[in-house]
Image 1 (cartoon, rainbow, N blue to C red):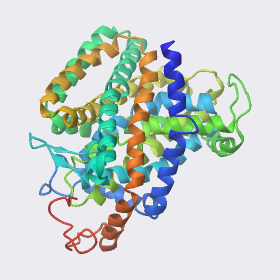
Image 2 (image 1 turned 90 degrees about the vertical axis):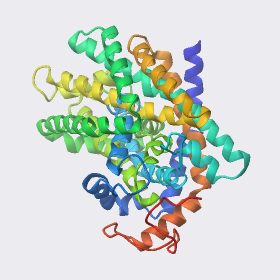
Image 3 (image 1 turned 60 degrees about the horizontal axis):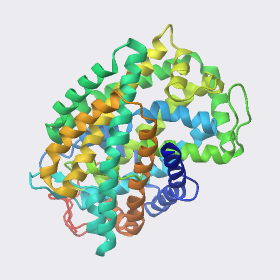
Image 4 (image 1 turned 180 degrees about the vertical axis):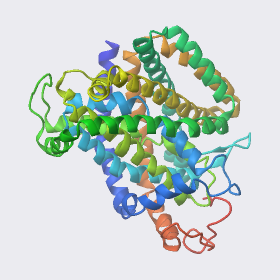
Length: 473
């Protein structure tokens, strides 16, 4: 009964009348107000994120641009990139991939906006660490009790979500993958994961960012290169796969093989829902770590943060989807990580396909645990102060063990609901603050349109200082 109830509530929140139109609508509105910034400034944004990586150490913040991006990628490049994509295609057909791409395109504008707001309204906690995100900017940017309500609502939902999608579901995926491929006991996996998590978390954001900055790029490159090998072997299927993606997005997919068929509405619903599940654009989660970045201006970190959605969906998700479609395994009737593993096994020799997916799942899921631990602790700090951070870290690490050794069908459903409840107040806040975001973004880009030189002017509207401390409300 509980599973049925949670499924019903999740269906309403993620259905065609609430979160999906709100996510798309907010992304489209911000895209228009920002002048399609996610397209026009993608090149400079990638350069700032991956080549220059930092604005230097003289600015307020705890980590560099790159470390903030790596931590955010750690939290988003997870089970959704492997199992979520496969589930979307299994339920919505090849057209679901198109709607994942579309949600990412407009989601980049939302990701930019929430990161901009996080830096613009960030604060410093009692320990001297930078704190920011929707749990702060919703209250500081929106006057009166409504802003405070949205901020507290977000903080509570984020703490709950951190134990679900950010913890138990991920550790369970790691334990299942290692048990299936190497026969390792879930209890042993749970103990090791819990201890490793505690060791990293006790060092705070600087420790988390150093760990994620080290292995997140490697895990993404490993997975993408393996995907390219499969696509190279099955290159004749690439064009037919792309044709299916674009045509089935608007027509639906007839039953074929073990595939039961899907209407256009299913492609839209599952494509967008799984897309947001993967890249978290509009949820406000990545804004929490963006606030910790050392940056000379909120616009610069906003641009860096929006590349996270591009890397997550346009690169990693696309690789998974195209491997599944070009190898033809999408009609097998399988779903989740098993479907993705079947696709990789069609291109790689022996058991390598299954091993690639299993290892990627382990690293993707564990990195998500670390990223979400930081999201959760910043919201605990917002709710009860810094005294709650250490107990949260220890309890979070213990729950990693519980997740690795427990069946989690109910937790998955609950996680979807918690994610949706995070997104609702954040999206409303972004819509309310869209004028401020657009106005200050355009003012900054007017004096630094290419981000290839460092302007020396003195205010946010083109007259106040763009260098030095982050401007505050």
